[in-house]
Amino acid sequence: MSRNAPLADALSGREKIVVLAPHPDDETLGCGGLLARAFAGAGAHVVCVTDGSASHPASCEWAPVRLAETRRGELIEALEILGGGAADLTWLGQPDSRLHEVSAADILPALTAAIDGQAARHVFVPAREDKHCDHQTTAQLAEALRAQRPNLHFHSYPVWSRFDDPNFAANTAGYAPLTLDTATYREAKTAAIRAHRSQLGQVVQDDPQGFVLPDAMIDLFAQQDEIFWRMP
Image (cartoon, rainbow, N blue to C red; front, side, top):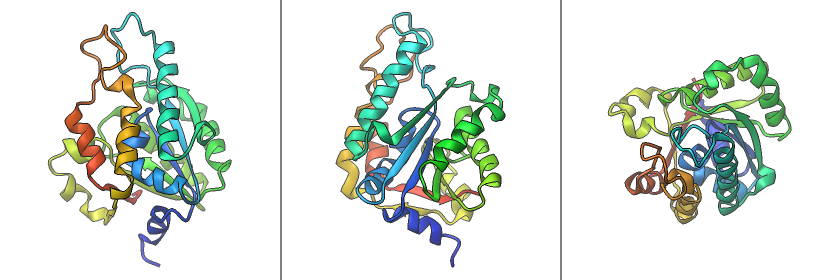
């Protein structure tokens, strides 16, 4: 069996998958096509690790609790567009941008239970090449989990690193990544990205420095094939 055989199986849609998302929207940006294929086949489940409440820290109208609930609703809407729904989401609600401050012992039991409950053998994890601290911490949690669940296959997916690292191709070539042709799912993926309206400047109006995903980036995520590799 080649090193990429389990990953090829996971990309086929014939086996159920679990996607770990550091924030609401990472699941769609990095794996929207993959999720659409999986939902049309054997099924998928998303575990969102943080509550996404730190995207607009200067807002007075959108307190963290309110923003987190909105982002959770946006995530469910995105999953519905991709072919899933609320039952396909586990929301861990950990603090956005402060995941590294939480003890792994306080997160791993819930994370492990969420994955074990899906009867899936493939887990997709944000690439440790992504610079955001929550992406890196989620990858570290997956590494700890892998030691406890050697029967599972862990695969990496990049979100921001594929666009903000000029040496991304060279830095990841050693992983022998596989690409997923997402042409069939691009319309759904675009709509799912746009379901995350709070991240597109359409909801929070009182924090001009808050996060906004530009249209050009939406096009990049929606139009380019997705990339995956066996988690190192």
